Image (cartoon, rainbow, N blue to C red):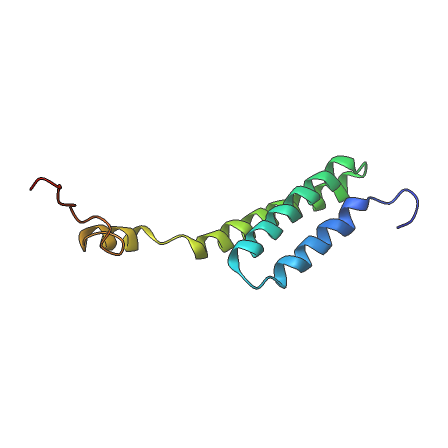
Length: 101
């Protein structure tokens, strides 16, 4: 990196590349969040308004990608409702018998 260049830009780009190469959803989500954080740091350090706006937009896109990746992990509300109606997750909601009964 040259003198006077914003080091957070290269770090944010590296974090985005890491997110694209992630093998699991959790790693992808964390890498996108890290990229968003680094884009925010790059924007805070930037004096040029045009670049600052670009970096802030990149941070927002990275956050949206992290949310999209995280939604792959979370079951949908319809799935949760179906699980509850069918007796819970893996039968865990069954009543336990008391020892004295």
